[in-house]
Length: 297
Image 1 (cartoon, rainbow, N blue to C red):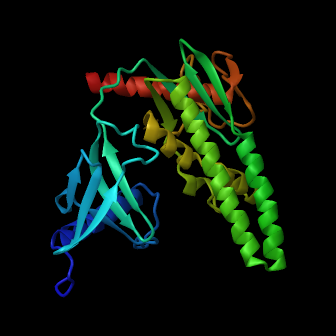
Image 2 (image 1 turned 120 degrees about the horizontal axis):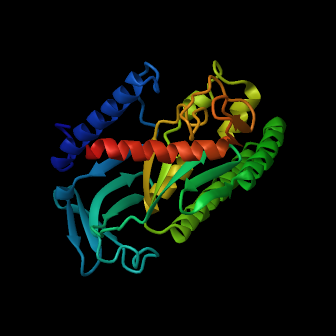
Image 3 (image 1 turned 30 degrees about the vertical axis):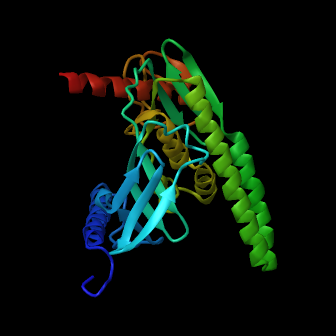
């Protein structure tokens, strides 16, 4: 960076970002979730430190210093989200090739009224809360959308029409994003002041050729669980638990089955019979409750 004309604070930002990427990869590698290959940056970006930003809350503008005497001005006045961030504090800015992402922070206190455990499966999201009962969210329309565009893209690829393939891919991406946005908005509207507890799913393990057959891999790949969980976390309170044993442990007596096949969970100790998705949702909220009790102690 010695011969670069940018402001010196950008060097600190680059070093901090590089260390963050390496540390994140290291943690995932030690957990067996990343391969022994150095991480690569697929999309160029730059994190802007607060010291490089001058914020005017009255005029709703941000001035970012690029070089000495050269600035980049951004305004969120009359933006579609202006009313949502009223009274919030501007956080870190991320500069991409084609846009700038500005984060906002809120110090609003939220009184939690309930906690819901959610089991994430291929066709649905199944939640449980003792006072409410069981909640079922159908994800089959999302699956159908994926299947339709898979066929269209396969035809375009077979004919060698790249432009048509990219057009179908963009449409699929936009419609999936719209479905997830509407789903997250429904969560916020129907369950205010709620902590949603999801499984910390490893998508790489679910689409691994060594552990899954071809048909199962395709079915697992179609449901973007992480995108759904991430979008909900952006507008609501969320937590995560380890997904292991959630569908094999009896919520009544604690008996752990060796394997779980089929839609119905059957406990050989207390004879409990229940849909395995419902069993998983009960266990998820129980795991979260035990974790909170352990922290209090």
